[in-house]
Length: 110
Length: 115
Image (cartoon, rainbow over all chains, first blue to last red; front, side):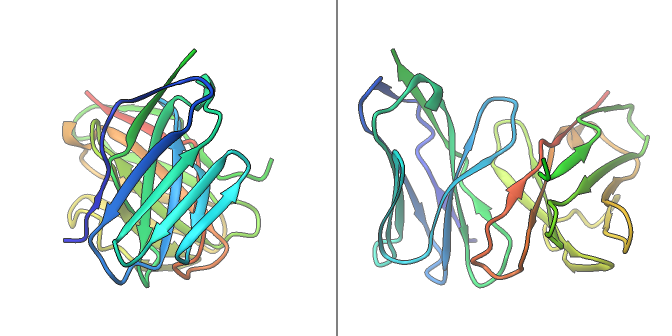
């Protein structure tokens, strides 16, 4: 079974710090990787997508992908209390169905 | 705002009734995906549809669940004879293409409660 694993947290960081969220996946054929943010009671919101090894930056967010080690991470710089949410890692192989991890709960404290 | 639309947002059904969940994709998107999120569980893929075609329903329970995406109108996820275990949030997502590089955008979801 293809697994996507995330530490459930909660991960607590002070305001202004860097939050680091990690995700590992089992399917070596995975091609696409996504990070979604989900506030309590709301729907997932796409933050980042990454397809090749290395870093991809978008504003305060940086996604990192290492296919050899089968992990993908999300860094949030200058964390704000409004970043407090559950972050979902999603992986797709040659198909289209997204395989989600259970998410990491992030708490940014003022 | 041409985002993914879902209705109803909340739906309460008694055991044995039918639930119909509707989804309209983003403008310009012709691919629709349904996911289910059970309490304390991750999002699970259920079914992928294009207009008038079910492409992949491998994640959908074999009984009581069906989905369609007609030529005109929204996609519909239908749950017959609901049971308490069907209580969950059901999310629809859409994308412009069907490759694995597609980004899927989610609607607000339908929260189904079965009494």
